[in-house]
Length: 303
Image (cartoon, rainbow, N blue to C red; front, top):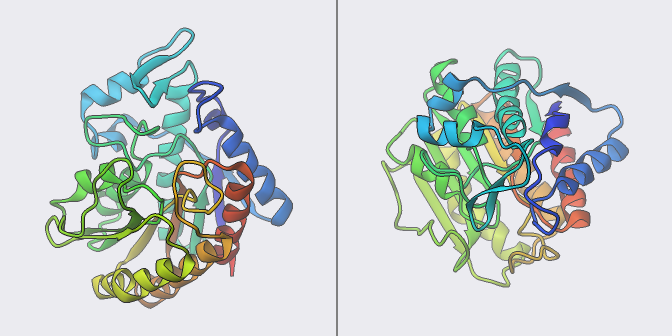
């Protein structure tokens, strides 16, 4: 297993009271270093403009990369740019590119990208929901266009629906998007009736749902759909804000549930994708729960 991060990802600072703060990444990195001191870390490169243009328009790219001399530039009530945001966003997206290249080259079967800002809410033209560039979408488009893959799956177990990822690929049958997320929660998308080109699979979890319902939802519908798709590569939007301690949502998962879904995804990846799984950090806003969940997730990627 390989792992990517970059110090620049700590430089994106949307404000001291903001949930998506640099301390999130520090908590993940410190926990992984303690749990797995032998983890093979690599420095994430910067994504290039051409990589971003596969999924984003020029206007959004220019907006995110425009210099911010000081303070914060607000893009919406929840999303802001600081002086270090552009570099952080480029390295966050670049991590996924490097990880895809590595697993496709056979350097490892699995990879984890410990990066921020997160990405799955960013649409082709709008940065939103704490997200600047859609990191997982940049990785998927790279796998499709650079490596020629015809069946790429994006699995998203963040508590919030990845509206941006869905919007980017809803008409692209070569890329399947499968998501479980809490109903009635931001960004209020991800209905089971949203099917795209037959490549979208959404499952809603009512507030208060715990591990039993989460696992049954995946076992009953989402994992069979993933298996039937026969992915050549599995990409994971690994959000840990469905944890029972998370302050931004109302699901009741624990670290063992995240380890379980990771193991299930690896089983399908071994069947169809030569074991190839690339995971990228998304949400998770209780520092201890985030750290514990990331350790469980990476542990399952290492097994």
